[in-house]
Image (tube, rainbow, N blue to C red; front, side):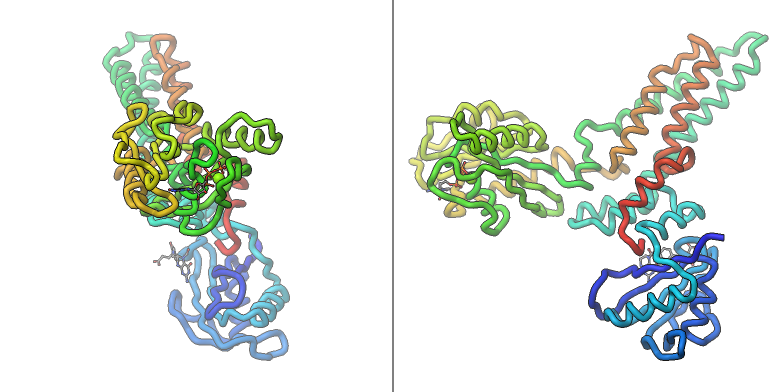
Length: 441
Ligand SMILES: Nc1nc2c(c(=O)[nH]1)N(C=O)[C@@H](CNc1ccc(C(=O)N[C@@H](CCC(=O)O)C(=O)O)cc1)CN2
Ligand SMILES: Nc1nc2c(ncn2[C@@H]2O[C@H](COP(=O)(O)OP(=O)(O)OP(=O)(O)O)[C@@H](O)[C@H]2O)c(=O)[nH]1
Ligand SMILES: [Mg+2]
């Protein structure tokens, strides 16, 4: 029998109401012992006084009863909605301990829900993502996955592979007779189209993962171009030191932005130049490393020096860059439309003119590069690796080289896909997935 576990499901600390969750076969006994009443009607909130071992009232709360299998975990579950005070929490946890329950580990409720067939792994991951979602786009993506979007897609592919496998098995059974070519052709065509569809979901930009983890954007440019001023403007606070001295910023300074629902991790970096100063050179090295890793780059030029354009910054411009000409207030009427063939955003980070256009351009760029359509997307590296493995096996697939080998390739591909939803081989991945959860989930 699985142990009965409990956890605070709401946030820790003082709060108006705290929700406690109990799961396992001991939940019923614990609930009746706490309330001194019979079990309430399933899924109906009931007012109750909860008492400790010597009959002293711990709190006046609401309790709910979810008998197995109709609960979140599929086990007997009880919920206690109490006042969110520290002394209430201390008295309750002491009593639950006396009653033989133990605190849940992170993700243990969801893990039990998975093991009891209430959730597949992608839905369990979606719950963790929903709890962690900080922007509306992240919330939408998590909800779509919780709704079974990804699980459905992966299962459709897997079913298709299993069907193709069945066709091949039929061919193998016919081995002594003439192989019916139409059957073979049919499974080859099926596998090709599945492989193409799966490959289409392995998008290079990893949009789903980017949306889950945040889009990395780096600000790059020569010393004094106004990079830190720009970061502060976008962040709406004085996150980085600004000074008229060239070489002020050395460390990479990160701020988190919500760009119209998109989570962005914006990094300010050291001005690009050769320096004899050991600290500054290290700063430049870090700036270049950041530039290489970033999903998007803001290449900032000092407008006061125009038409002189810093060469190191110019070299960073590519189709994932936005070109900014700063200190427009110091420029004459001669403002270029493009630099290195890319449109120019002329602005003043100090005064704020042109910032709205920059934000709009950033948003448009993020949307055009990372927007996910209505189709479900892969949101974790784990999903991508599994689909890539499946695609690889299907690329090898060639019944002309031997029907048995080809069937084995299909089996491998189906197995990789099965790992995404947790239909196969799950033991080794469960710990990785559920330990990322917060306690009470
Ligand atoms: N108080 C409370 N609020 C909550 C949850 C919870 O567990 N408790 N949830 C938890 O994360 C979320 C809601 N999701 C839930 C999902 C399934 C079940 C559940 O009991 N499912 C059973 C019974 C279904 C039914 O009768 O409608 C089942 O699937 O068999 C409950 C909540 C968010 N809000
Ligand atoms: N006139 C004017 N001055 C600006 C503007 N933006 C920044 N500055 C000034 O330019 C100087 C350098 O600004 P910073 O933001 O520190 O420049 P940086 O690119 O971060 O410089 P490093 O950290 O040294 O690489 C400061 O004196 C700013 O006040 C602007 O739009 N107009
Ligand atoms: Mg700076």
